[in-house]
Length: 549
Image (cartoon, rainbow, N blue to C red):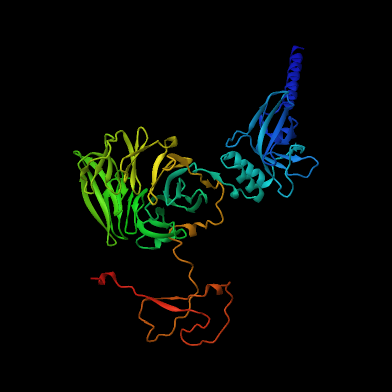
């Protein structure tokens, strides 16, 4: 009897527990799902057309509940107005959950987007009810992306919802996986950890221009990227698996390969004549397909100069080894120098070489490495950056600008302890601390944020970015070859012995139209082309380099 009674008590307890569990709601669930399961009721009203609303959520369960408003949507009752997709509760915040005590109600404002632009916008008198489903299709995906990346501005999200493409949304700031940032002529270059190279400005936004990039160097006129070569590049005898490729910012963004190099981790300087690259063991100078040498250690510092580059090597016995790379008649000359001081950092300005000693004091050196008088006894120096007409010295109190100024200028430290960098094309000073980039505004005497728009992380890139084969440096050097044409018959002017002949036909731009299938026609003479308004020949002769005197 005791056993049967005990079993009955146990069964009664289990039934009561099961019944209570069925009436209880999960601790966290999507807003639309909580309403569908009867855990809550929701009232909604527009507070700013299609861009904002207020929700009143009532908890009908016997437990406290937390609901996530992101991805649900409000649909109008009776009137034909825009349904509202719910994104965030606060601009810039990914916190989209609200807790409601058992048996009570809670109210919250939400940021919303119009889901149907073909109907009118709602007002405060529009009656809404919460749909018992997630926002459908791309709208739901875009709202989720907004929560994941809340820095995307609301208007950009709205544009993406209307177009049905997450690609049309833009966020602001540098990517979270930014590896390196550079600025040239006002254009911002960003290298991501995955090897994607982005280019842009405050007006145009950041877009990808290449992939497979390991590092890059900026001179005054362009970008030199260290990249892995494609598999089919290995057909060349001098291919080493890596190359330096130049990206010309000023001529439509064209790539051209400059120098094949051995596998490396950094490019510290580059020009059309050669490049300095470093791996884990050495610093190398490459100056042609078969000309390379070891110049130092990967710990050596390199600063660009007007005539080439300056390398700071190890310090021994109170002196620091300096190596100067000079461009001369399309070749590179290497000069060995030394400075009578133990240096930690160098940078070059037009008037002198600026250096930091190992004790943090500022030194000025001549181009031959001799010590010069400093304009100010700057101390507690941390780093130094070279711009076109000055150097920026980071100190424990801020930044000192020295060079072409009559007297040194002290400015505040950049926001968030940002790393200094210079636009050597325009002579402007920047600082970045992901995700923000700031520019020093000398007129306002303040650091001004550079507002950079970019595609959200994880979204595909615009259709204007070509396939990897087309965007890979070195692969966009020439258009696809046209169909071969018969060369004119040899004659007195034909120079038949020339090793290479290129025919260029110029047409009137007004006459350009989609090509049509050519009609058969009789030959009107060797080399004659009656349909071409202009024609001329370019003859290129190649001489054996060994034959040059």
